[in-house]
Image (cartoon, rainbow, N blue to C red):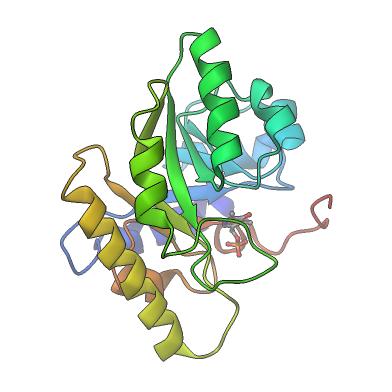
Length: 224
Ligand SMILES: *Cc1c(COP(=O)(O)O)cnc(C)c1O
């Protein structure tokens, strides 16, 4: 079932976005077993993302053959567990985290590829820079020698208002294009989960993070 789902969504994503960019499909793997994750990889998934450090670490050795992304809120005291092990940290959501990442990455002689997370819906329950503060944050973090900014990530609010969601995506896309105009490393715009990824891609996302679509409903709630 996982393999069929992966093939189906990879085929859909293969159409790219309206800007003609390919869309990267990242499997969001929280609560999934290494066996399930490896099945997705065997079916063609090239990147997998965990949102809890404990799960990332527990599955690190058993999962093989894909880029490893971190997509959840990252406590500064847990940065050390990711150093040298991720190809992309999608959730760089505050400057204190960048400070810690810089310190740890430098010690390990490693460079952390990261996306700046934007709290596009201005939700209290979500972390991230506001759209307004994002350009200054990007400018501030870009010179960090052991952090390489690769673009932006956002989670849309839960809403049935497609026009509102499309407008938020367009704001993200505009910011992304402005930053990309000044930084050739800025290539990823990560927006879209199982419930909203088509709308996100239609409005300029080029990286989507799918869990439920690929693996089915989550059996166990993720730890708080
Ligand atoms: C779980 C998760 C997803 C995927 O969610 P689904 O609705 O299951 O597709 C995407 N992004 C992040 C940050 C997540 O934690």
